[in-house]
Image (tube, rainbow, N blue to C red):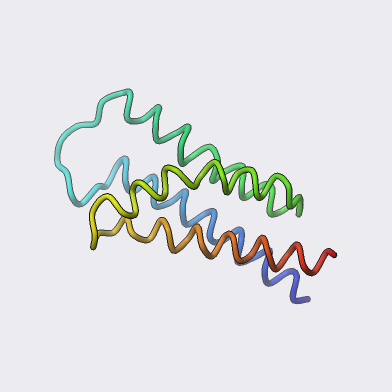
Length: 111
């Protein structure tokens, strides 16, 4: 039963990163300017794609894939979360930490 809780927490953290990335692209409270096409592509490959794949990896409970997608998310989330403090984007690192905690807990339960 506890393993399902950590799966839910991992999915929730990955979905939160995905939603935060959508907010960053379309509803950014810190910028009124139109984003360049390159920004959309960069955010897609650095944040959106790995967070979507992280949700799938957590649901199928593959720890190696979960770690891989977490590592893929790490550079982008670190940059956005510490580029300016305090901002809404500091939530990226909180959600990523929660995601990594869920990976550790799921892995311990499977061992």
